[in-house]
Image (tube, rainbow over all chains, first blue to last red; front, side, top):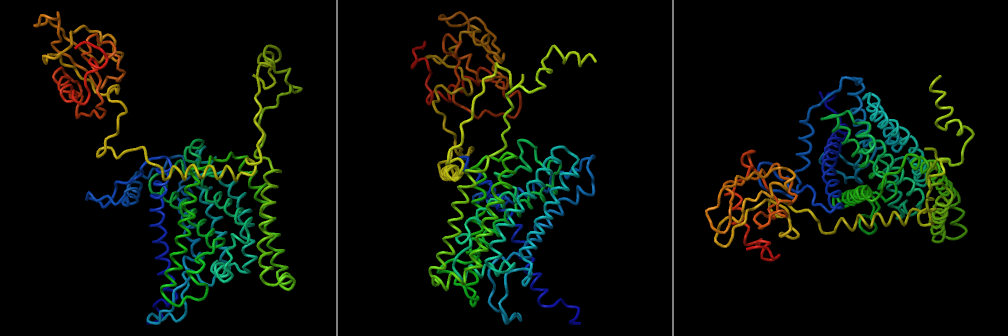
Length: 425
Length: 177
């Protein structure tokens, strides 16, 4: 009989999945509200503040708005245009949502829980759906690349020029920015010596130096690339509504559109998680969380709260940046990816590799304190030099002003001579 | 027109300075602008509970009213100047002989179709006796089209409703009483 019952690790994993998916969906719904509030406040409006508890007059500052938004979009007609490729059209939102949810299997959402002997959990229970997954970072990357397929499928299957252009732009942009994203992350992996995100957090907690301080250039590259990967302003070209109506989800409505929008928000949440976990110390905060194993529930809760607060802070930054900057032009976007971010990411990787390689020699030559100072000072030097060099050397965009000197063919095109003859022929 | 056409004057874009090339100063200035607006006082109001403030109610162009003179009679002398001036043709006056000795005609009926009105204020400008005026009432609603055609009694009642808050322009601006 007992063989038929799921084993304890399975139950634990299922509980974690339930908590994570439920939490993420709720968070995505409320982040939409936060985004609308931020948009309103930045534009000197009040924002949604009316919907409270249904059927009462209680308003709760508009906290019922996500429910109303969700109901509205679910109850809308789920219209499938006749000219679409039905299979791919239906599959696209599912692919993108499944991929963006599955990413979280490898992303820790806290430190870990202390042992719970009553339930048979004798060791620390890491707050991570798939603990011990050695390819954590690779898993995150692989699945965020699969999410691109959702965008591409949606744009292609829509059989619509705006959708198609949105999908094209999206594929070019995401492929271009995967590289700086990977380079930014490679420095962290190199320094921590592991692809596991929880080990990366532990490394920052035990040394007390967050990788944002140790690898400023990597942080910058990763931050910019994750804005582009999440297709947030100023890199929201895949769905630039002024140019492309809605981009790749132009033809979608109702619940399918909702799935696209939710997974877009999840991309932003994923990006915030990765930025916090890899560069801003994860659950670590000096003097508050400690850095050793979790022994009490208080510590577990504080670490979870610190991580959540940091993630919320990064998301608020994402939302504030949305209203601060105009969108990049496509050539500027590509210039930034290939001519600025790629060299800067390489510079960061080389610096980190050099620092990690020569750390033992530095410690014997300078002593531990000075070696640490040099290991932080050198990347900062590279950061400033790299930034200034990138600013001075790279063009800000393609020069698209017309050529003003008359070309060899110009004379032929003067109206009244050869043009008229061509028309007659 | 070709770019090499001599009649085109080309303006050169200013080359980017160091601050613009490094991007950071622009980043900071954009972020401070949005952050400042994030906490600055809001310009919108929670409308049904909170009324928007009208800058100067005396010159606001809202719902019309027909003014009364000191004896409580309608001031209009049925000269049709407002109906003539109206670009939307929303004023309909039926004139008849006045029972009072101080004027020849008075409006037997005076109708304004508030749905056709474009609130341009031309009627107010045209009126020689300052009988028709636009008030600062801005939320004009009705449940039917018929309800939105204001007759003489309704326009006079608008005057009775607003005369204390918005005195007739005639007294302040030297018009006829």
